[in-house]
Image 1 (cartoon, rainbow, N blue to C red):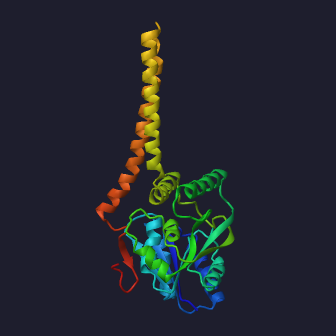
Image 2: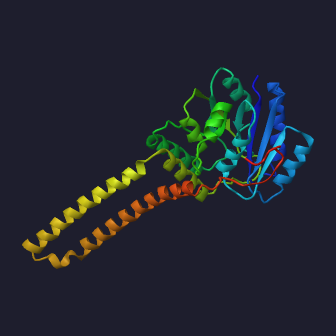
Length: 313
């Protein structure tokens, strides 16, 4: 039997923590595990989440918590838990109960067959709006086409992995985390199980559209250079259009009497070229911004409080 670390990022989930804890305890009992730990990472919650977690920790020594100094984002919170995990296998699960804790049993059993990573692939996504489903579907399809690393479709961070995989990801230095892609990049022996994703138990989703957009950009910029190549192609296309407009301008100037009426085509050309330039500069800016984050070398998170014996990681 493998010992188990279960990583749970928390951001304003006071209504879900106790229910999640009870179901996790039942899951561990079903697996008949005696060596396990629940690692709650409080990612700058404004509600009573950390108080509830600390209360549970006084009742159960297997509950560990990491209280971050502010909100560092979901991926960095999960990464913190990965760095602190001490057991043979590591599970990542969110606290909203959309990912049923009972699925961990199937994940664990599959890992015991000899796999290094087992991820949970959604076959249904209950309780989510049509536009969320649509954007998620096309994001994963788009990322699959762009990425040099095969990233499983319609999967989140809900998965189990061996300690070796966990340590490999923890050694990756990039500051803009896209963990599901980084785990896929490691290779090893990976497989999946299917499950039905549930509606949130309580509360509202913490992933706003700006956060979703940043997450998408992190994934694309971390695993694909296609946007940079696209900027180059757009530059060549714009140059060809500009040459065509130059030839056209010379023609109407030398062979027709209508050259004064070229104002419209001139404005269209200028706007087109300007728009392409701004798009290309924006793409370069996204990549350069991530390079700057890595050059600064700032830690991905700061720990304010923890009940780990050594919390100076």
